[in-house]
Amino acid sequence: MSTYITTGVVLRARSHKQNDRLYTVFTERRGKLELVATGSRKILSKLAPHLVMFGEVELVVAPGKRHDKLAGAVLKKIYLKPPYNLNTAILGTSFLEITDVLTSTGAPEPQLLKSLKYYLSQLKDLPTLEEDWRQRARTFLGRFIYKVLKVTGLAIQVTRCQKCQGELAAPVVFSFTEHGFFHRRCVSDNHNIHLLIDDSISYLQTLASRAEPAPGRELPQELLGFLVDYVQGQAGRSLYTLKVLRSIL
Image (cartoon, rainbow, N blue to C red):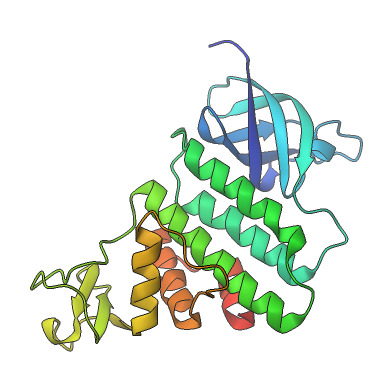
């Protein structure tokens, strides 16, 4: 296969051998890629300044045996520039981490990439007052999580009880044991469950439809807790950024 050019958002970077880095990039045409940037840990590296956090990059990629290699990179856009609010940076990093753990290598998801770029672009406009920031950030994170779940096919039906098939009505729980929503009376006490309030179910149902929640309708804090648990269950591990944000939001 010959060298190719693609554009994507850098999701993460980690050390690889003595002077190299391994970059995970979510690209438009080829989905998530693992790319080696040779010599990018060196002070005078020409690639490293272009492969920044929250950056959208045009890449020249040369196929390799184990990992494809970066032959060139041009930074096209930075969605969040320093100096920035630390909590906002953690929120943005959570978007990258969630995208990384819930997508497969080599599977293009153009709709998800579009959503990722949209939410990253909104970070700079978050309120500066702490309480206002907290409410907006909670809503952004919850909506982004559900968007990823919906696009990747990981979202669960939120209209009917998985056992009796009746329309969901309070009290409603999500069973991590059976992986679905149930009326509380339809699950036994030995299930690992999360009880959801009426407003959370209503909000989820709105997100599941094509409609958008009404402007100003903030995502319930209890619902965010459930979505975070659900993502970490899908990932099979605790995610650092979500752990931090849970304590903040």
